[in-house]
Image: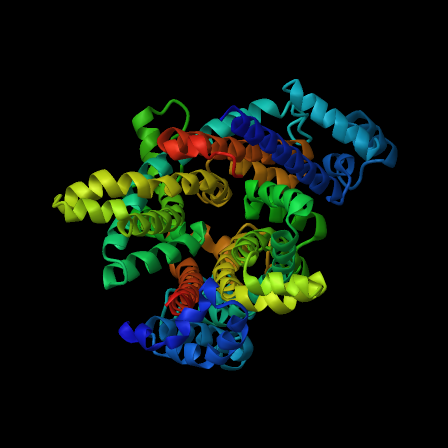
Length: 318
Length: 301
């Protein structure tokens, strides 16, 4: 058990290290000179060079990587070229905003996806199952900006029942802010529904075909008891893993949704940083996403172990 | 739906059949395709896809207007007899732009998916077959790529290399590689201890031959399903990147970038400028998914 956790932690750190390498070196191949980008095309070559030296972007690659990584351990995420200020407060504020939006999406989609998947499994192979599965798969691959626009047209422009921007503005109450987040959360719900329903369906079908389910039916338990007590518990285990791994996709979706609904979250921050070639901001934002993903998978692993005693013994697999 | 039982070819997909699988699978292939043609979901999906392929290839011949021609006097006009889908802020015909806009996405998507499938299959075969250090190292890189959303990795690299069709194909292809490799690896692992592989190993065949001539045909169904699933995601990714301004560039007609250019007009009531390209994307995605679902059903039958 302790070995398993240690191994898991080691792999997690290894993954994060590779993420940091990808992020850092992708940032380095961006063409264009940060000093030039800030000062504009008409600035003198000497002042561009001076700014580059001040920013430290013309040091050797390895030196820059080491100082960047070293800074991260001290909570120093670097200095934004566009804002001329420390990156950390921007990333922190954006992350908090995104977490609010993501939580709302999860609260809606998790029960919905599980119910959909279980229903599909109970009617496996029949029309209800095909409708849920194909709808889920289609919603999952319709880009968020497409469903977002349809939602804006219907609820924001035609029916005028929900606000079409995500921020309620400064000083707005929690309830108002919540209302503003409903419309942006729905495209994320659409994308995640298919995955969760698919896993819940597969898990339920497996549980339905198991010996213990057959025993429960044969000893005369009512169908609702069999499903509620014997099937759901076992079928939901793989679903937890999927929910955790989907946080990565969720954050990708945030880029689009936050841009479309003009919300100051982490996706919007990364998008704007990429447009402005603001390396420090970009690297910090992407790295934070990597950390969130790795932590989510770890949390899912721990939850699985807590829920499934079998894993506590045979937990040596990867 | 019950025609599944008529297919005797379903059994050889199981692991027990050993070396005979290759031959049997190949012989059964035509029967499987005929089975596919009897599925209404497949026919609808293939029909929609075919429609967009025709638009992509011949669209410029039958589009009612030149998709680039601006008529500033008739800008933002609602759908009418002359302009079925209305016009955009520059007075360009939305219907013509939707028809011709099929081209770039239908070129980039399959090329990127094919690239990712070829690289991913090679990597997955090697990871599954050799295992050990290679599997561990490649596995960590796969995990690291999975930790970052595709859209975010793409625009890291697209900003660096500049948005062009070639860049999009390469970037999306490379992002798909680890995802496909993971599926192929899993499929290879179920094959690894089968008799035909032990036999091949005892005969001293070289690893490349074992991987590509012996294992590959047996994991082909898994790869085919993965390919069609990825095709759907490629449409998603390309459309999203175009919407964010990192994909197909204006004034080239493209659904994603046209939506980005016009969605602010929604609040003024010009819904036709964004709704029709949006429906085009949704219909293409749905078509690919209907095909994916049918292939999966037939292969699992």
